[in-house]
Amino acid sequence: MPFERFGYLVLEQREMVCQHVVKKCRDSHFVASDYMKHLLYAVVVLLADIDLLAEPNAVSKEMLVYSCTMSVDTLNFETSLSGFRNALDTYGGFVEQENFSDGGSEGRWYSSSEEKWKSYTATVRIPSKDYDNFCNAAGGLGDLRSKNASVTNMSQEYSDLSTTLAIYEAKEARYLALLADITEDEYAIAVEKELTDIQIQIANLKTRMNTIETDVAYSYVYFTLNEVREYKAEPVKTDTFAERLSSTLSSAGEGFLSFLEWLLFVIIYLAPYLVFLGIIAFIIIAAVRGVKKHKAAKAAKIAENKEAVNSEEK
Image 1: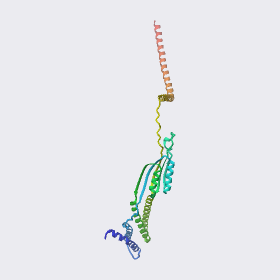
Image 2: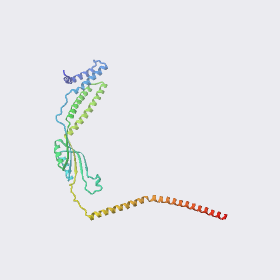
Image 3: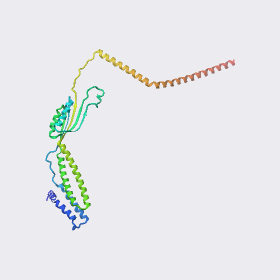
Image 4: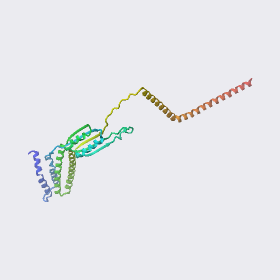
């Protein structure tokens, strides 16, 4: 008999086997050592885990997740933004995240009188049946600059999750039935621990499956709306000779005044240091002059003494 056929046969008969083993464990006429009890308990748990041999559940339909990223430029920002929100209401969508900017955060507006350019970005969810209609409506609100659409097939993952969920739910049912028949605390605690782990796995599987189902039911649209201005070329103006000369003289005068201003600030900045250096120079010069005057007076006195001596000798 092939192993797969044997597995399905065990699946069909495991309820009877599990109940028979548990009954034997509780039977007062059944005498077994602790080793035999542990062995019988292991057989029961093993039979409860043979769900892995079951055939996987097939997903009846493809699980496709649609997403689109688009950028639209418009000359009339308020009208286009109102049209986007109307389309969102028309097709039953909702906003997950949105951001609006009036351009005030950009540095060029601090020192410029030009009008600010607005922008709007949003992540919205649209019912998948109206995904194409909404994208066409949003793209027609202005000049469609870019559009990137993609489809992610989640069928295989969803099928695997569905199969795994069925396995864990079957295991949960077996462990619940097993727990109802166990009277010994040691085995009951072990089964309860396994049952808790199984229930946590079931909750995680259902959460992931619900996320996929939501993504399939509501497509993603990442929308950006930018305000633009119509370009108007200004006429080129040619200056006359007098205008160019006046401009040159004006620039030269401004440059000279800037130099005088700079020189004045330098003098003001260096003035304390210059005064201090002047005082030191004055002291040094006075000291040098005093030394020279003292030496001259001394030399004159020596010369006078020599003359006096010479006069006496004569």
